[in-house]
Amino acid sequence: MMHKNYDDVEKGYDYLSKYWKNEANGAQMTEFKPFFKMIGNVKNKKVLDAGCGTGDYAILLQQKGATVFGIDLSKGMINYAKKSAKEKKLNIFFQKADVCSLPFEDNYFDKIIIARVLGHVSNEDMKIAAKELMRVLKPKGEIIVSMIHPNLGNISNLIVNGKIFHMPRFNRTVKEYVKIFSEFKGKIVGSGSFKIVKSFGKISKEAYDKLKGKDFIEIFKVIKNN
Image (cartoon, rainbow, N blue to C red; front, top):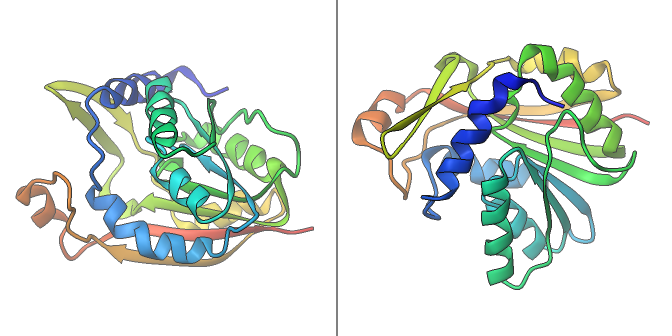
């Protein structure tokens, strides 16, 4: 299980789920096209969305023909995702869980996606998370990871209706992830950095101008060796 320093992350996203409006944000808009291009064909594949949040990506994957499972540390986000899937008459298996203790059998998934989640995982827990992710992935299976670019700093506070939740972000480079995943039969086969795309949702001009022109999102793929 994850350590207690994730309490604010869980509480923050629980609180956010009560006020969430289904609008794309700057990070989602930036990563969307390259992320799904790297995911590739998912028809008839079993896919885990680890850190699924509101379930947006899980829903899209199911609509593309995958059998999808979603986990998240936040019960509020899981409930939101379940409601969204039900409204679209989709049968997606959502449950509260964390990446350091995955409730699945060995070699269970063809693909795993992790969108802007591993940055919340401490250096202490990252090896545990990598081991768990590789355990539930089939041989030759793929993990597609997106993350906030490490050059943007280590601390990110979530502010919702005036309430502040401390969101620690542990920035690691792709080279560091290569070293971590290689310990568990993982090989990183592709990566790329992407500059911010303006959100269709709510992002202040100040925030956009601050990020404009900088590498904002980094995406990479891990393949599990036999």
